[in-house]
Each structure stands twice: as structure tokens, then as C-alpha cells.
Length: 455
Image (cartoon, rainbow, N blue to C red; front, side):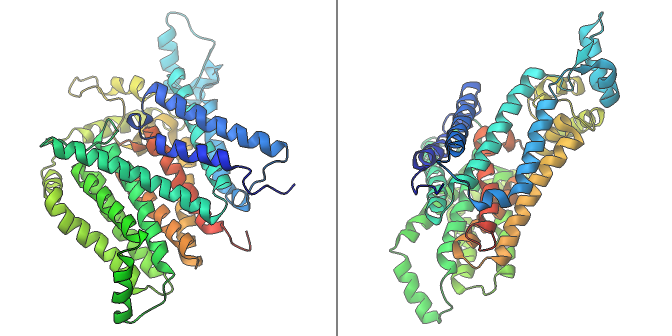
């Protein structure tokens, strides 16, 4: 049955509302907030599925073309849910000897007949629910962003959320001397990562608006530049400056570093893969670095961020110790992990010397996922990210559509920035950031397949 043009309009409106709402309640990093977010996403997914079963809604070709990502996502969900299934203790001890010893010791003096792979079933259940909601949001993104207008609406909704977060964070910081910006997040580093993802999409949209311009003489270019300054594109550029100001005000070392490194790397990739780089695109990329770093940063604290980076030593930071202990933890649960979400319960055994404060996360997403999910789980997650980045990279090379090229640029930059930041923080444990990251992964597949004749 042919789909009505506005058949999913209200689902799409609710979808955008969740995207903007997610960072508001402390990044949705509270039990009630993430539960509300997850239930809302799953409700939207069931809403669409019920309509699809009745023949009211159809799915776009991009959903079918993204099957490798969806397959990996489903295998990841199956794996996480299977971590909670009780197994005979003898069999469990063969799969994960350390987990078997843990459960036997916890049940002493009796010996349990069955026990799960996870050492914290309640936490793994919560993590499985979150993971299910994230994958559902990814699928909804592929389904609902089925035309150019909706893609733009989603991009601008995220940009608007980033600008509002930036205005709030910057105003609070500037009113209180010495106060760092953290927006509605509890942690400035997670706030910085969110702004970086919003900036990535904003830069991609801005590049899309310039990519379709033909090569011009310098006189024509300067004339068009003056006209451009009084168009809505200038408002978008101003929004990017506001977000950069807030990003600098976070004083987040890796947040700022990941933004500029990912911008430079993705910019170089974009220029190399562009069949013909226009003056507009080259000047935009140069201005993003020059204006934002050397002018905006002079007034809002880039120097302080640099000082924080240069003053960081092994003596002033204990994240390296946490990472070392987390690595030992992973070695005890190498294949199947200790159970997704179990880090706060298991990790204290590896930092029992009392030199560290209580850590609920490893401050390194790679090590935390490795310790909790083992090699099998990390393989699924790694494939999902790598395949999405490859899809965006391929789109950057193959697509000539300015919007799709801008979208692929946004996806590559956002993915790269968060992967850099993940080495020293736990952004993917924050629901708002994880949900936004899933949208970036979806953008990668949309940029490659949306509107292609062969799709």
C-alpha cells in the first residue's frame, strides 16, 4: 500500500522532541530520565511498527541498505540480553572462570546450580534496555528521515539544541568568574562532547550550502560573500561561533582537542575526496579554525585550555591508574566480559589499595566496554562504528549531492571526535550523548544511500 505523505508526521515530531529533550535533564543520566527517554523511544518504534503491520507505513530503501549495521546491532542486543541468562555453574566456569568463581564465592557456603555471565544482573538489565532504545532510535532515524526536508529538520533541530545549550552554558559561566560551562549536563566534558557533535552537524550543513556553488572569480566570490552575510546562512555561522565559545568555556582539554583535530582531519579528507574544492569550502574550513581559535579563543579562554593541557602530568591525573586497573579487570574477563554496566560493582576489587576515589566509570569507553562486554561485545560495537564511518567516507567520495556530502562530512567529523574523546572519558555512557551519536551513525548511512537510484 502506498504511504501517505504525512503518515508519520506526528511520529517524526515526537522523534525531534526527544532529540532536543535528551540533554536537558542532566544529559538524561539519571534513572528516571534515561527510563523516560528509553520508554519514549521504544513507544515511538512500536507506534511505527503497528502502523507498518497494518500497511499504513512503509520503510525506505536506506533501511534495507543499512542491513550490515542493523545486523551487528541486533547481534549486540542478543549478546547483552544473553549475559543475563542463568547457566549451569559448571558450564559458566568453562566460559568465564572468573565469573564462575565470583558467583560461587558470593553464594558460599552453598554452591549455586545456575548463574549468569554478568556479575550485576540489575545493571546489565538497565544497560540492555538502554542499548535497545539506542538501536531503535537509529532505525527510526533511517525510517523517518526519508526525504531532504526531514533530514534538514533533524539537522537543524540538533543545531538549535546545541545553540540553546551553548547560550545557557556560556551565560552561566560568564556570570560567575572562574566557573566553567557545563550547560544542563552534570559534567563539563560530557557537555563538550555534546557540543562537538552539534558543531559537526552545523559545519556539515554549512558546507552543504556552499558545495553547490560553481567556481567563481575572486570578484564574484567577494560579491556573493557580502550577500551571504545577510542570509540565514550567516545566522547558522553565528550559531557555530556561539557553540565554539561555549566549548572553549568548558575548559575541557579533550573536548576542545577532539573538536579541532576532527575538524582538521575531516576537512583534509573532504578536500582530498572533493572532485573540485570550491573557494567557498576552502575559506570556510580555514575560517572555522582561524576565527574560532585565534579570535574567539583570545577573549573566551583558549589559552587557559592550552595551559590545562600542558600542565597535565601523571602526577596530577589518576585516569591512567584507573585505565591500568581496568585493563587488569578486562584480562580477568577477556572473552565475555563481566556484564554490561557491572563496572561500578566489579572495579573496586582492582583498586582496593585505597589510593583512588570511587570510580563508577573507567574514564575510557574502550576499556570499560572491553571489561564489561569482552572481546565479543567490543567486536560488535567496533564493527558498527567502523562500518558507519566507512559509509560516510564512501559517500564523501561518491555523492555529488551537496546535502549528502555535507551530511557525510558531519557524520565523519562527529564520529571521529567522539572516538578521540572516548580514550579519556565515558561519553557513550551518557544517554543524551549516546542517542545523539546514534543519529550521527544514521546520517552516515543516509548520506550514502538516500536518493541513490541503485538504492
